[in-house]
Image (cartoon, rainbow, N blue to C red; front, top):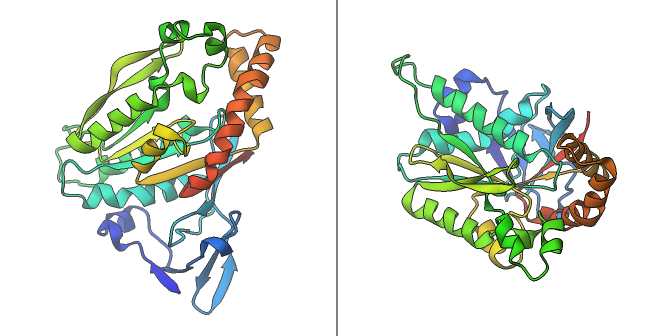
Length: 311
C-alpha cells in the first residue's frame, strides 16, 4: 500500500514560507515489519534508505527522528540541522492553521529520561510555531501583537510539595527519591489536562527550582493556544493514572538517549547547582538512573521516537 505525502494541508502558506520538495511516496510499514531505526521511502519506481534530519541543542547534542509509529509513517527528507524542528512543526502546524473551533487543542506529550533535552526541544518547537503564526497573515496590523498559539507546560509543576514529602512515612527516602513517579501528583496533572479539554483554558503550576516547590497558577493556557506541549519524564507510562494521562495526548513523542550519556549531563547539572561531586554521583546512582531505566520502558508507547546523540 502506498500513500502520497503532500504539503497542501496548510492551505498554501507553508509552501510559500518553506518550499517542499516534490511529493514523496511513503510505504506503509506494518508494526511487525517496522525497524525502529530506519524507514523506507520511495520516489516513483525506486526505494531509498532515508538519512534522517539532525539538529543541535544548547547542550551540544543533535536530535534525529528515528521512527514515526503511526499507521502512515511520516518522513520527509532533510539535510539542514534546523530541519528536524521544521519537520516536527510541520506535523503540528496544520491543526493551528485549519482549526475553526476556538476550543480545539492539539496536546503533545513529550517524554524521555532526565538529561534527554525535553525542555529544549519543546520550547524550540513552540517558538517556531509561534513565529510562523505571527508572520502568516500580512493583513494584521504590524503594531498589533498576535497571541501565541503554542505553549509548553512542564510536568515539573506537578511535583509534590516538600511539605507533602515531609508527611510521608519515610521523609528521608521521599526527599532522596524526589523525581520518582510517586513524588509527583499525577491525578492533579490528569485533572488539569481534562479541564483543558473541556473548557479550552486552564491555569497550570510551574516549578521553582531555587525554592524546590511548585508555583501555583503560573502558566495560563488560554483559548488562543492551539498547540500545548506537555514535557516530562513519565507521560507515557502504562500504570494507573499515568496511563489515563497518556491517553489524552494527540501526539506522543519520546526522546531516546543512552542512559550513561544522559546521566553525565545530569551529573553536570547537579554540580552546576552546587552539589558536591560525590553527593551528585550518589544521587544519580540511587535515584536518577533508576528513574531513567523506568522511563526508557515507556519508549514503545510513543508515536515518534527522537534519538539524542553526541554531536
